Image (cartoon, rainbow, N blue to C red; front, side):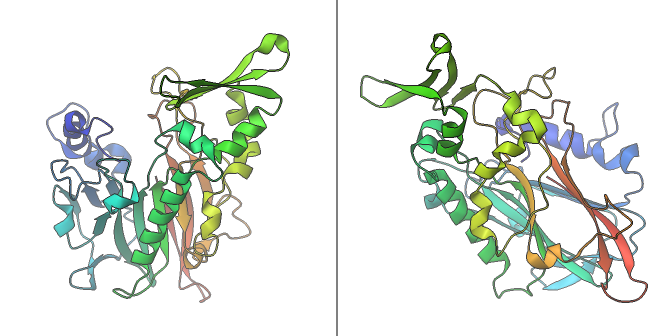
Amino acid sequence: EVGGKNFEESMSHVDNFVNAIDRATPPLLSSDALKEYSRARVYLDENYRSQEHFTALGSLYFIHDSLKNIQQFDFKAKKFRKVVGKETCSETLESTPTLEKAKFPQDYFPECKWSRKGFIRTRWAMADCAFDLVNIHLFHDASNLVAWEKSPSEYSGTRQKALAYVLDRITDQRYEKLPFFVFGDFNFRLDSKKVIEKLCSDATMQTIRTDNNEIHKLVFQETDNDRKVILQIEKKLFNYVNQEVFREDNGTSLLEFDKELSVFKERLHEQEIGFPPSYPYSEDSSQGKQYMNTRCPAWCDRILMSPSARDMLLKPENEEKSIVYDNIGPNVCMGDHKPVFLSFRITAGAGKPNANKHKCCVVQ
């Protein structure tokens, strides 16, 4: 997502970061760190004035000099074209032939008057491997209180519907079916009702209502210990007394409540998660490991793949860490989402003698 929540004010900083030349620090496309990546394709959906099309998604692809023949698919001409040089596309991405972009239908999330959720798809080929890369942003939990009401929550169902929409779209009959990687802010949440029952198993719940008898706040207190408050929940408040439960052992004790992907177990695969929940981190630059007390921490940011894409990942016996699935900047403030990456090698012509290995890295 580019431009952040206040994209009308912040979008100008995106261009400046990527490719502006009138600044003391080199922009991203000409930075020393990427000097061995002489080819790049940057897609930035910045046209926030177009409510019909705006998704705020940004997809940046950098290709290392060691890869000699990379091609990208032209969806209009229905053929691959060689990738040469660096290109940046913004504004009207819907007319760009090298990508497919769509917003979700408005009725998928009716309580939101205007949503920028959607996906961007690109298609690539190198050696005799071809695959799709799909950047996605699914719907959030609008209210912690609504998410708590039932298991699974109604928001989970909305995300399931939207993800199925994308999977059906990228595997339909318009183009050849290829392996695909789907990455982005899926907004997957823990099963709120179940996780709260675990965190507050020995607590009593007090319900505070408004004058209209609507639930305004839930307060969970210990039965002894002077009835200490251990959790408070409001629409946009999730204040739990011990954040260490989400960081200790990377929060893996709570992975049993991460259930939203199970619906797609035949269509999508994921490497084992070994990092803490990726959201919602404090945006205070001095609090890189601290979570905000706004939502229950969850693994919102993911990199998933089709069964055929999983088969492309190479893991030789002598390369223990040839596949790495982790977060970036664990101790540094990176915004409210901690970026996630998947690094792996693809074997071109798997099963053939002297097959070539190509290093890939997908960063969400």
